[in-house]
Length: 497
Image (cartoon, rainbow, N blue to C red; front, side, top):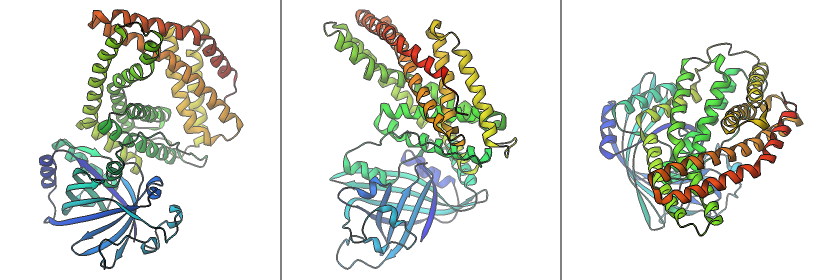
């Protein structure tokens, strides 16, 4: 059997999950024990292609399921077929036992390939059915453990799976729970958690996937594609920040929020109050995440280079220790943000518009290339006004150039499929190069500010802070000719639209 599974996963403390389950009402709960073994090739072939293959046993019955997580924290492809009772222990599955609808061609494996068990889950599930709005939902409270390679991790989560009805009503039900209970949207499947446990890895940061727009798309359809890509980018980077404190996860989460804001502002004349609310929440989250990103760059990129250039300055390690304390506090603030009610309501709202639309309120069927050309021209003129007399601009003015350039670059990235031709790649390369150059200028300004603040709190770090500022000043001076050349090259290029 082939299905598309739409499911919201909520995580939190055991008592909060149990209370949330009771809050939902519905049919009489039933309990079952689910014993599941996941399989893959020794090389992890299925895992690398985004699939998980499992045999689940419940009450004597066995079923084989192939799953593919779409990465947006909501949608999964699922192909399930019944299996006969095992005749000799834990028999590994065969690919020819999968349902006829399963995408065997995407797996790139022969049907006779040997599959090995990778990890196990032992789950006590309490489930019931309920209605929220027009949606019929199966609610499952799962507790248990995942075991792999001699290691274990507990499982405690509440799953709301859509059986029928609108996706928006499912998400509205989850949103109501967030108002009552201290829960967060879970974005990691049991398969992903088991894989990390098996390999001893942490959730990896996720980079943006470009939303490919077509000139025939309506504004409504184009925005849906962009928001779907944004939801994948946002939700994919929550676990790397929460579970691993990954600097790249923080960076990519900020990039995802900036790209989302850019898209909403790009089409602002066509959007209503729902888009404005999403934009406000994304902006708030960006501000909260900013200190963690700034201190990561300072500690991982700037300070090591300064220490290498000044090995005799004993106060630089002291400066580093103080920066680490601040970085740890900033990452704790980022985790608190992600676990907070307000941010999780924002995530659910983003998933809702990504799957159900509703943001476009004016001229939804207007020609997309014409709208894009008009908005790109506006972004381009704003950038050129900000960069007028670029060679003479100081750091504050160049920072404004950088902000305007990022808005144009994201808009170009979204729009490039609407204007095919060789000029697209050239323009994007110029934009990327200039953004990198201006980004290094910004990193230097931020490093100076951080070092000043650290030295103000610890007089023993004053000399180290001075060396950081000297290093940054020299870096800016040496980069100036290349930066000016990058601007001139970009300014001389013909816009591709």
